[in-house]
Image (cartoon, rainbow, N blue to C red; front, side, top):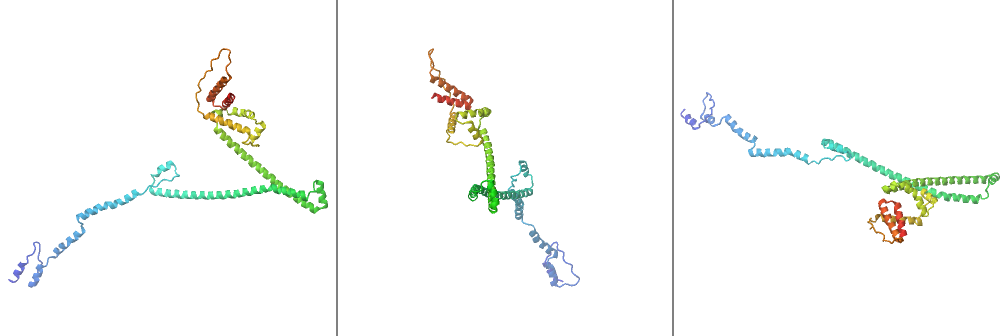
Length: 355
């Protein structure tokens, strides 16, 4: 017993340590030392737990870094959505529809924009196809028109050839008695003559139809020409000329008669039955007067000085030049106030007489 006592005192146990229960069986010195030297199982479990807790819980610096990085990752979708460009409304929409465009969801905008693009592509394709068809139709129409013109141009020559052949081969057949005699004496030649006459009648009918079509086309073109030129003339008139147009049109024939045009010529020219050349002296005179009147209108209006006639002795007539100059001056004032063509022509005649 004295041997085991010092061995037990040599290894003091912790404060909380409860020694294991010792069986009633006798223990050897080695077994007793082993029991006192091994730590308890609860102490081993507690010593093993701190490393696991250290592994699970991050350090304060790492935790702050993780917290700082988390908002950046959550804000990336918002930044991407903000950078997406807006979708423009379709150009074909009205102003009211375009104002409501921004209130639509983006998915709806994308769908409508895609449908509008498809519609525009289809419309452009249809327009291109129609343009190609129109070109093809115009080309065919031009070919047909050219073929018709060529055919009609050959009709007079063909008719002349038939007349020449009739005068050469059937020169002896001139009256109805000659035809009757030919039918009785030479039926075969009579059939040839009859066929030739039928051919001549058919060609002549084509010539008449061509002439009628040409006359109808010329009449249509002339009607369009009259309407177009009438509109242009009415647009070029001043307000005062429009008010006096009826009286001016009534006075125009007499004015043209004074220039050498007869009423028959004026009627034919007005209906388009005749044409007038620029070399006609009457037309050149009208053009010259019109140029002078234009220059007179463009010239700046200057206040003419009031020149009093020289004092004459009683019983002495005034010189003729002074009277003409005074007349020109009064006509100039009259034209400046009215601006009518009649006053301009009167002033022009007075200026010519004063030369």
